[in-house]
Length: 64
Image 1 (tube, rainbow, N blue to C red):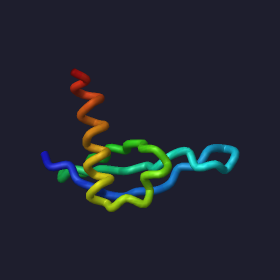
Image 2: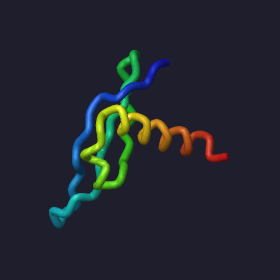
Image 3: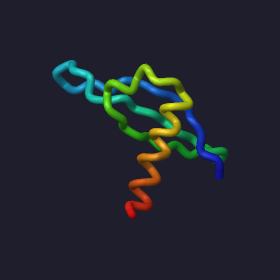
Image 4: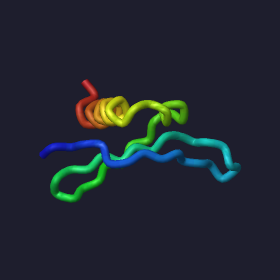
């Protein structure tokens, strides 16, 4: 299963402050994996965001 970059957006808190950068990864079967990154990552390239999001997922699934 290949997972790749789908979209990015900024997430905002109730008070209007930027909460983070939401990156959505998708696979060929139509599945979506949303990942929250720090707010300052929004200006990174899609390739860089994809790598960071994959790193987050890998660390969650395989913490050691």
